[in-house]
Amino acid sequence: MATLPAGLIWLASYPKSGNTWMRVLFANLLTGNEQPCNINRLSEEELLISRWRFCDELLVEPDSLYSAELAKLRAMQGAFVARRLGTPFICKTHDRFDTEVTGLPGSRGLYLVRDPRDVAISLSHHAGISIDAAIAQMLDATAHSDGPMQLRYALGDWASHVTGWTTQEEIPVKVVRYEDLRQDTKAEFSRIIGWLNGTASSAEVDRAIDHSSLRELQRQEATHGFRESLAQQERFFRSGKAGEWRQALTPGQIRRIEDAFGPVMEQWGYSQVHLIAGRTSDRPYIPRELQMGKLVQRARGMLGSAQENSTLLLNVQAGRYHELNEVASRIWELLAQPIDEDDIVATLEAEYDVPAADCRDQVTAFLRELRERGMLEVV
Image (cartoon, rainbow, N blue to C red; front, side, top):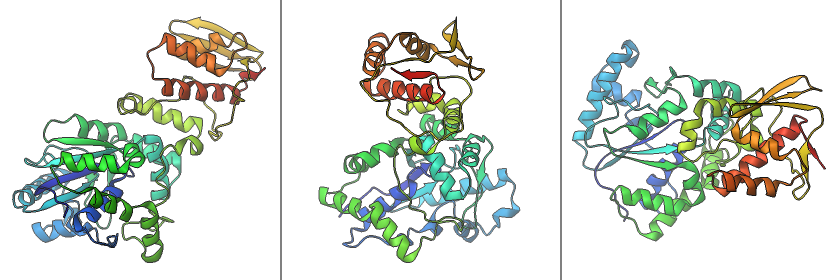
């Protein structure tokens, strides 16, 4: 039977980054049942963000405490629990990292990180708010969260949440990209088990993954509901897709996220698609084929002025200015004569140190945006 060493294992993430799916994977792995685990028996009450457990063990009503008092008592409770564990305790948390609360001696952590552009979509559906409101929450450095079953905890903005957990040196943490877990669940989950010094056969891992499939989770939710879903949610287990933001977000929404979180996104392999540093449209970002193989060039009526490491463009017809960064300026230079996308990509790959796939994605996105703004013509 699959095993994990005894001790506290934080399962940490910013909300809507795959935390619940990972909990289900571990539940199905460790029980070893022939039937999938009941998603409504994931022991929410036993987690260290549970109001019920806090009140039961400390005999204090959390709403009567100041934030600093609550943090100190949570740290005491966590340390008490961690010292007495004789079994593995996989404890979900959305807390931003805090030395007192989550930096408990002897604990370890798994940190799930997901493309914030997809997080915004999932958070919007989960909370029943607009995508713009979800992005505003993700940008809020003072954000807190709580609920009828959970203690109030500090969340912060997406970037500080990620860096807080991934750069701290208090406890060992393994970072898991949601997209990697989706792409090759068995390989990634097996690596996680190995990092935790656990044991599991290939068949046990396969069974856990099968019992934790999106189809199975949706089946159980449709049949019995899911106790952790919110009243305004149509369903908790929605799609789980990676890259959905490409169809769902507007250019303006993409820019807000990338402008705020760009460096952290790049650190974890989430390439930015916007190369224009100017005003964006609020129309949906709907990918449209640019008739690959066809030649493209600048649209007529565009005036440009080279600046230091950038180019300032004036769309005469629209009466709008656009500022291009260094790479975008180079593409604009290449568009002076008819050229196809493959030649643009090849030129940039030769001149810049950029992975081929990222280069292709960014060039395609930039050309689409130029065409949407009426700044590009197909010859």
